[in-house]
Image (cartoon, rainbow, N blue to C red; front, top):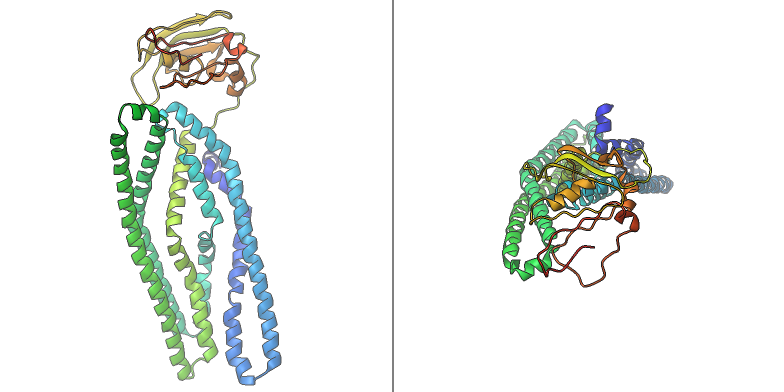
Length: 446
């Protein structure tokens, strides 16, 4: 139970287990009603054509149509249930993943990507698509094969061999495409993140003439992704084509075997047709799974990445609401290590700023001014020492409560000629930061 609580992704899906049980129940009746067409054909060949009874034909037609209408309603119901399950999982994890993505960007600017939100969309689309039905329908394949065995052992053996061969092709598809397709997805993510990061600094890149070099670096990841994806697609296409061809051969083969048995007067022509239709239904989940294999691989990769993000970025604990800050700010021998590095940028810094006072920090580039500002407002955690506001550690403040009292503007790489946002009087009451600039340089902060 404790393990399930730690795995937020699995716990969110398990909350929908009643809906999945309902879909499994619907799938049972759906697959049961799939026997209506072969049974109808069996009755047509063995009863109606021999007796030439119009009344029997009409009654069988009415019953078959009624059951097939119920089949359509059950298909509609389980599709709607899965759509709502996907929406529920998205609603349960959307805000949490947004916060986790934001926290990752704060702790490691290089990992500031929206990939977790895209992975959630991939998982939701898989849960609401047609591919997932193969997993609900596959457990009923042995039931169909058993029914064919009841018609005749040879027909059942033929259907069993066909199912095993197609299942082995599906496993081969998994082993041959998993590695190149996973590597292609990784290269695609690197390519997207690289382009996204550099688009933020488009003006600087253009001014420094770095566009061609960055494009070359992006093209290298892009070509690698295309090459790996082509390898996976070629292998999947070969196996999928082989699976389709073998399925048609098996379909013809069971008809030929049934016809031979009918000629020997071991079975009736109706049994021959019914066995062919039932075997087609038994093999349908395997064929459906192979056609949707790429979506399954993508959903599995998204699941693992989401699990890793949620595990490495725990949810922020609820903070006790504190009185409005008065502005007593202090740092007690703090040591700050920027995220993603092991070298401290600040060592043993101590200061105290009383309400109404202003503090200016002067120093050359990369001397730790921005690092100090980030540590004072709690964006970067301190490796050692404490930062306190009104006697309470800065990490103990609720960010939503503290935000209206903080003014913070990050120095950008370029300045826009438009008006800059005003700092609220409440934030100016307790801390202001300004970075040193050479004489004559434009002031980009306020």
